[in-house]
Length: 336
Image (cartoon, rainbow, N blue to C red; front, top):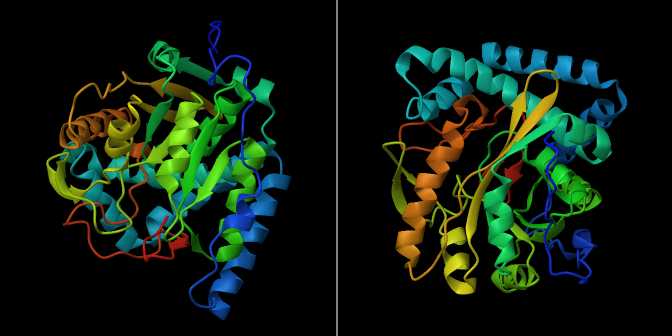
């Protein structure tokens, strides 16, 4: 870790409103869960608890083994990941990048299950950082920051690091099945210190996010995947896909800058937290801001393409959707 001091978020002297109790604000299911979904929820819970309780080196070793086995035994998923990453890396590097992506994704789950248990001091010693001048300068403007995230690296560990350094983050949670797993993730993220805003039909999520930004805190938006099918079609890494307008719309509405951030996995169970230059909304239109978001996503993912967890179809040629070794299904039909 660097010896620099971190600014933290918020206005001086103002307490942080984390709005706990998000589990009670989860919308009721539109239909009962199947017996299979409930059984899958029990299985996830058992794996989660075992991963938390065994020694860290054993957990990481088993996760790495699981990633290697999944890469070998899941040809359909392997082809889908390869189709996505073919837009990002050279053909000569594709096979190795796909294999590394399976291992990175398995490591992500191990890290997510253990994130709330990480000792802040130990996490600090194992994490290096770069680019925080971009984030702190943006917070100095007092407008809050929209953190541009991708399904890349280890974002739950990043949240743990951020909250332990007084950077408070609010996130929007897409409701997924099994419900037991979703509720557990809500509790995990609240234990870390995040404000969790369950996405619900008819709810004004934007208004709550705007209040978080007014308090000069962070709003984290995962933006590399469209779960609704309604996002505009754009070009990303030379391929056609859909990328949500959320960061651009929120920046235009509130005046908050957009700052791309990722936490990169490093050998030896360590991490590197990278902050990229801010996107200032200025007088830019939503369309112009969206184009800037696409450029930033390419830069973020390009830091290490093998840590982009693109296990669902991203581009039109990525093949049909399917379970990436037991992923959670969004109630709107998408998958985590």
